[in-house]
Length: 204
Image 1 (tube, rainbow, N blue to C red):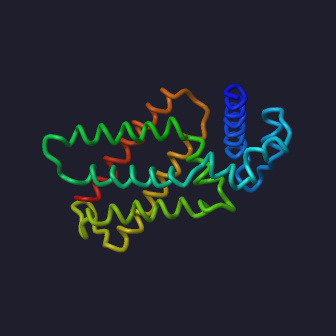
Image 2 (cartoon, one colour; image 1 turned 90 degrees about the vertical axis):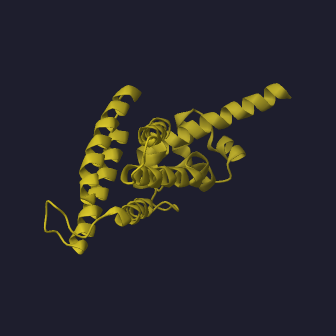
Image 3 (spheres, one colour; image 1 turned 120 degrees about the horizontal axis):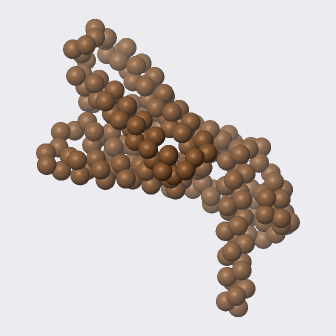
């Protein structure tokens, strides 16, 4: 009995891994159960033994909890960067940075699927929702006037929207490229420095 159960769990994990790959390559709307079955050389009927439909399989490999986690980490990182902490500033920034690295390395395929390949799912508007959240979190730290520019408040919000869109697109570009984990980490570190120094200047 234990061996049979272990075999079932192994097959289920293989189906999930194949589904993630197919959703990443084709997107939810174009992916077929037959594509997933072909990926691991099993019958489509075998997949339905474990998942009742494509929707259930999709939300198993790309769960809503991941979106919540991503949003929480993003909001926390924006607060940490913009607030004035005392002795523990570097510690907090280092901790949130490690959380971001964990997200990018462990869930890079899921993140791309959520923001670019989720048409027909509850994540269809996820990118716009994330950008709106970024702007809403950043706005309280922004000043109406700046030392370096005569830009007004309305123009400032437009600028912030452009910057947020640009940063999300840069991260997605990084996640879609085939590279080693270490390369991904190093490039993300440089993108993060670019974001922090650029967006923090909006506080001045």
